[in-house]
Length: 431
Image (cartoon, rainbow, N blue to C red; front, side):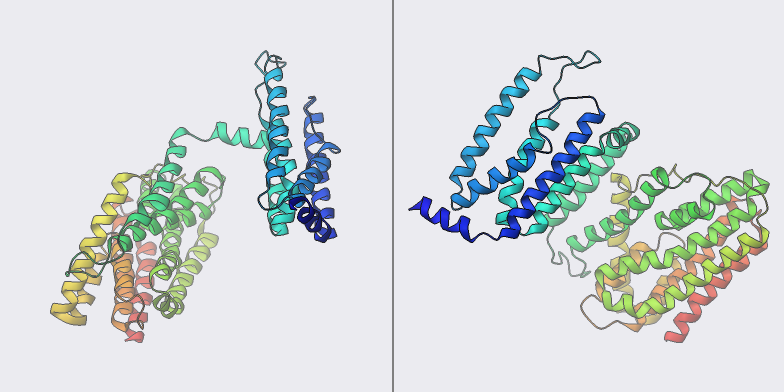
């Protein structure tokens, strides 16, 4: 009875599915055989074997789909043969004298066999995706090995930390308030840290492995995504050490502070989309003004071909110390915002917004976004966001002047004051 049902399933399987699985097997076999031929190796499988393996897997699955016992038997037979091949192959020596212990040949044959049942049992995109991914991983051997050799062990540890804080810790945290002082939950506090760290980490990787050293303001742009304060300090110190880098430092600092606006909008969007949409015209407008100032000033005044700083010697955005500092700041600022709002109303929140500009404003702004999440945007909280960004520009100008030993001069102070005025003016207009 099971065989009869399998024959009926085999007869009713779409003809297009069989063509697709044979075509995918042929495509994978073509790439596999060409790869081995270029490397001067002879391996089992290829442009004829892989379509047959895919077809065999498809037939065995169609004959006995539920449960696929025949498919399991076929896979076991194939695995036994590949195991014997691998065992014998280990006795051979590669041209460099090492043991032949590569797994690509056995794995490729198994994948070719599984293309058949996957094309029949699931949507076509799964079989196509498996084939394309296997082909890319197979043919990109040298590129991937070069990438592995070029990445420091510390970067692999950083990637592991990122997976740990996002995939393991975040889902385990409770999403309910643990105190009446603030409505922020442990889940929201950790999510805030993850959001900011993820954006900073992406910028860190781009600067270190993608962006070439002679990229002008692009380095400052990516530095602003990482941290506008860190970028300001690095560029100001460079201006103090090199007179030829003053104009580039001025433009880069303004650009890094302009990039702060879209970065903050992305973070706000994660917690309060309504607030982000309401703030977007104002914040993007101020950010565009800063970007225009930076580009025009750089074009008009930068005549020296100086290499930009790497801005790579910064603290790891996924370090435990960085994460702990941000988490503590986020909770403390959230409590301060709640207490201030209850005790002094909007005027107290405006004052606090002006004060927090002296340091990292991310915790303050995210705390406002989490307070209003799920409700209509609060104009007072949106105005506080704009006041905090304007205040931060003023303090950034002070930092730049101090670290550059006043070499960035009046132009930078004027540019930063203009951006601060624009941000505070937007808050006034919103009010």
